Image (tube, rainbow, N blue to C red; front, top):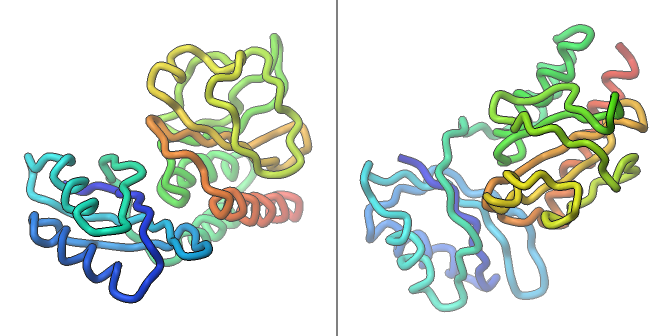
Length: 219
């Protein structure tokens, strides 16, 4: 079974090696590591580890936080496919598709590319904002009126805002949105249980949606 850990650690020589050794001591095999963000004296990393079925996530948290300067921000099961050029492959798949299928390809592949729980494209419709395209895991709860459309740049959305459906709040869904295609449409991303979207992740979403918008415009 695989888990995705988001960890904060002091950005100093050897800290990542110590973390790897500590995780290995509880039977965790590191499959991939992505640097999400690097700041003054710290780094935020996403680490995918594989453990024996039945192993408890708490064991991974304890092993990681036994290292001085390491804090686990979140841990969740991971079922994505590990790829080194995820964004490029997504854009290529969209370019190969035609018509409305391009938006469906975007929401189908965005969860594993951006490491979120679900993705949907939303836009104005009868009675408020409606889901135009959604990934297989996207919630079907009607949105109604929202206070953030249209968006002009990637933003993290308030998980406790009045427009957020109650089932989404119940599972602490963290969300981000970015303009896609027409100005009235947006790519809405959700993470059930978090973590929050880091500024570097929002920038990454923005780069991707701008490229996809260009592809859609040239179709």
